[in-house]
Length: 106
Image (cartoon, rainbow, N blue to C red; front, side):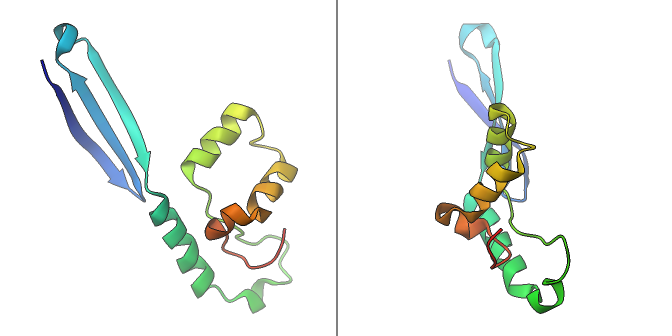
């Protein structure tokens, strides 16, 4: 009676883990996705540090934030994936500052 786990994939701070439970005749199999927020925050910092914002101030579209997968999933579940006001509120929130890549307010 054991639970075995196997790492299936690891990319961009995301890890996919397969769990196989030998209990109940081996009928339990599931996957878990784990996201390392430190990787996402580090990527946002790299974008912020290497961008030349003086060149992009007049452009209509700018890279404003690196959005973690769990936030995209939450937006989809709660129905605000296409709500620009909710995204603006999320990006301008101080608790999400670590994911911002552009210094201005949206």
